[in-house]
Image (cartoon, rainbow, N blue to C red; front, side, top):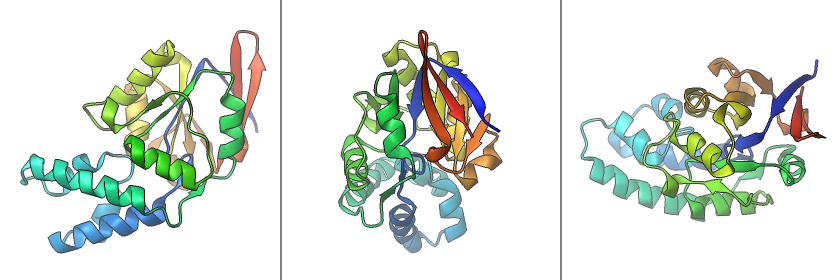
Length: 216
């Protein structure tokens, strides 16, 4: 059954939503965690959707945060240079093309270099407006990034819809007062208002004064 979502702007997460970077994310983070003796299951439950220094703070709560910030810079550089296995989520290219006439932005925990590296490897065009790690002081699940995206687009948060896959990202979107289209199997456990297996299940339809998303 197709659901119609009335919306004035779309905010899109990147990892797990537009690009599948699971292989490289898990490879690098498990390598980081091994010397600390952190259980791999714990690592994989924490790192998706958050900025790296926040993930480190959760897993090593007693450690000086300055070390986390430094190691996060190193992690971002490693991730940007290792894009082996990064591919587009099915339907991402069409969705981004169809959103071109309408207000939309990427809101990602990645920095600009990493965003460009992964989007480029996946063959996807980066939208004109992006909110990256450089633009916020607090990581998802804090709503700062999504609220900033709505502000830059000049759209009320309640009129935005967020495309997200991770628990941290969906929590951030809901904290911002936005509806969520969950992408992928893992999103369903975090109570998005709508859900799709991939982006081929979303159609952008122009209407008077804006657009609709047909989901399903």
